Image (cartoon, rainbow, N blue to C red; front, top):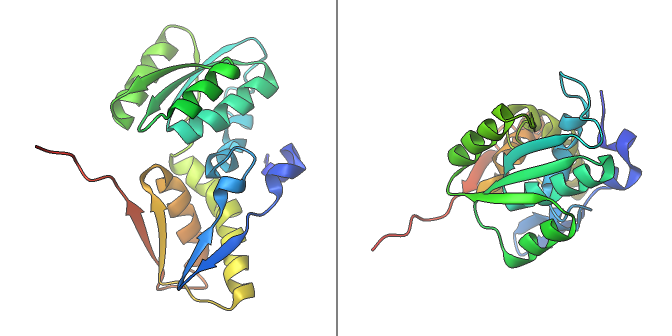
Length: 198
């Protein structure tokens, strides 16, 4: 199995846990990919159909953070990537994708992004699994979850909640699965944007 430690030592470095009042914040923004998404990249290094060869076209659907992590993965392997991005895509993320020569398209929802990525795969691109699916949750359990468990045990703290933003459902699921044997009462809370209405 490919793990972050076997890919690159920098990706195996833990992120700090910061105490703010009664809350603890895991600073995943300090990861090399500027977020938690790069923790799930080993999923693509162990694809059932084998590695994506250099020069190949690949497509995937994900959040802006996942697109940035995917861009670094594609650049390191010489893969021509198209990212179908759902959710907020800030100017800085668009510019970074352009610098890394990653083609991208915006989609109004995760479901629409997955459907568009599947259509691109029907046209010949290699479809990469999303970094927020069940397989990714297993990787987050073995990486982020284990790291968070160690942090909490060192701080001698027992969490009641683990809170994550909307795009981090797989990371939240994996982290909570890792924590539950030691902290059976811990609950996940996924923050979702409020629907805008008139």
